[in-house]
Image 1 (tube, rainbow, N blue to C red):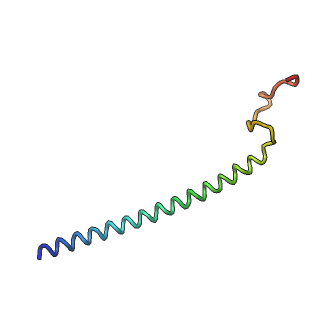
Image 2 (image 1 turned 45 degrees about the vertical axis):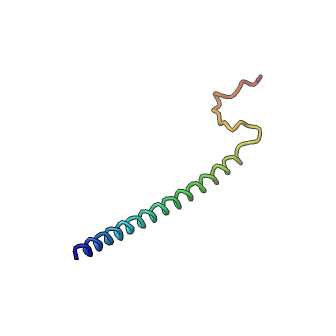
Length: 72
């Protein structure tokens, strides 16, 4: 009888652990989903910003103080 209770306790412990593992897996899945959405949004923003940069420019935005002199 003692062996049956021990087996039952171990089974209950395993079921609890599986429940926690399933919850953690769902949380990780939701986190990855949100991260992928953010990556997709940032990728679109970068593509839009690249379209705004004129061709031939090195892509660096400079202030007027950093512009080369007119004879350059």
